[in-house]
Image 1 (spheres, chains in turn yellow, red, cyan, green):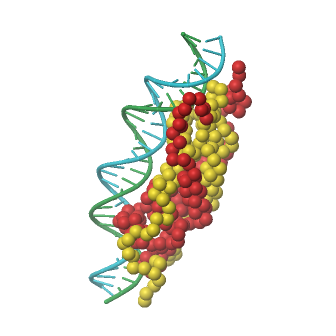
Image 2 (image 1 turned 90 degrees about the vertical axis):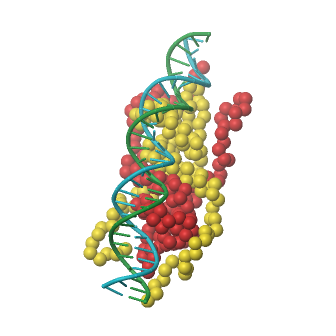
Image 3 (image 1 turned 60 degrees about the horizontal axis):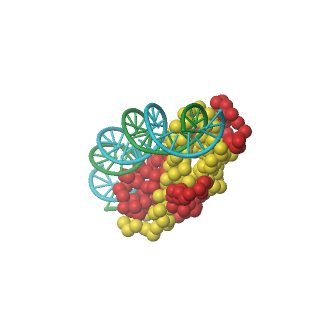
Length: 127
Length: 127
DNA sequence: AAAACAATTGAACAACTGTTCATGTATAGA
DNA sequence: TCTATACATGAACAGTTGTTCAATTGTTTT
């Protein structure tokens, strides 16, 4: 007996129409990748509370200036943060509202999920 | 002459109050990391158009079943996609609306930015 | 039950990325 | 101008991650 498979098909090997441009995809992936490190994400979250200079960020995480600066470099390369000189210091801030939303969205998703389902393997619970 | 520096401070080394839980941060970072690969993101974008089975996804990207399956495994580990058997095939779909929003947000951010500003170094345009 | 199809998984190697250190640059103050 | 402060950067090493192959599991069909 035939069961319904995927979208009525027989799996043509041709590639489908581009949904988004290659470049946008590449940039979006880079953006995600930059946010995908706990240490960098921590910085971004900190900056979502307001701008801060490198020394402050380093102090808050008890890490070296250099280390933090390297992280900020990555974030800056993806236009996640912007900087601006303020006297001796250089203040960093989130680049735009998209970034803030992105982070909040991710945190929302992160707290919704039931901690690694792990497929509780009972007898015949197929799902 | 004293210029305003960071938040009225003298850089106390103490760590500030936790803004979000360690666990949420970790999960969010993992989520971002999973989305931060062009190949996986491509799959997610494809699934934002509707569910599809592994064979379809492999066909669309002209890659091996195994490769695609491995990618789906990563996405599944972060609860980005869910699967469901449909006859011979296993259909994958985005897990929830958060994911869709996340992707659209990222793509929006990606297309907003003017292709690597690169700090057009004029004479005294400090910004 | 056997064959065919669909998808998953473990392991291995290559490629990538983060952290650290040492050095370099820019601004402020004396 | 000289020194101190604040930050950035290049290079190197280690840890992480992606892709591929071979073997395995689960489902449908004959």
